[in-house]
Image 1 (cartoon, rainbow, N blue to C red):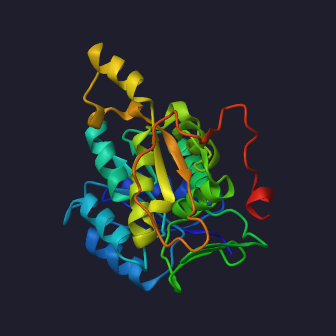
Image 2: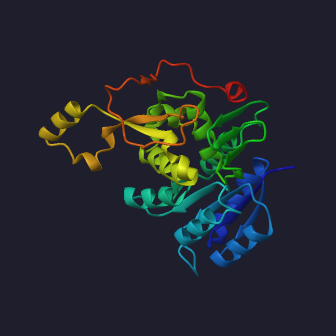
Length: 286
């Protein structure tokens, strides 16, 4: 059965071109021109992805994005945003709300179709065939592709699932944001903002509730950060470069939790390098 895409745009010509290119790639396509129609269609039918224009006649597309991502029944649906706004602030807002890609108008329709295929390919990997990892109240069941917290299945997006499994497979090894972008998002780190990783880590920690401490942040050495400040750098709190990476740090057996304080770079945690061999789909299934 072909994957089903919902294209949302009030411009009939743009919608027609996108629909044609997606159908050429083998997708089933439905269209909507308003926010109201979009929310109704998504509630009544299952879509594998939504391509959402931000400028709709009845509501700001960002509100539609927010509603879809906050609803547990639709939060897993990948959303590609279309917008005439090219500013960094506009992009960051949409990524904060949970979008999976952001394309600025005017755009190449063929490229959009290929981006759609790429998103679905990386967010919907083959099901893992074996493996259950248990860390106190947190269970990663890669057989059923479920994350269970205190007996309840969490509603994670495909990216959040892959991110958590990737970190868990390499526990206590710091993964830089570039490595995470390359191995989890399957994108070139030069083409993606670092904040994308930070946003997803923050959302994932929130969903992990009292087990949020299991994902820790590694910061650069205090001395290195001090020299940067003395050289006219940004305030540390606003300095993306202060973050060295993230790592999965499960509690010892019998320990129910501890403080999730950022660690400095001189603490005894291995740092993954670009020379490390990437995790393959087969390793996800081990």
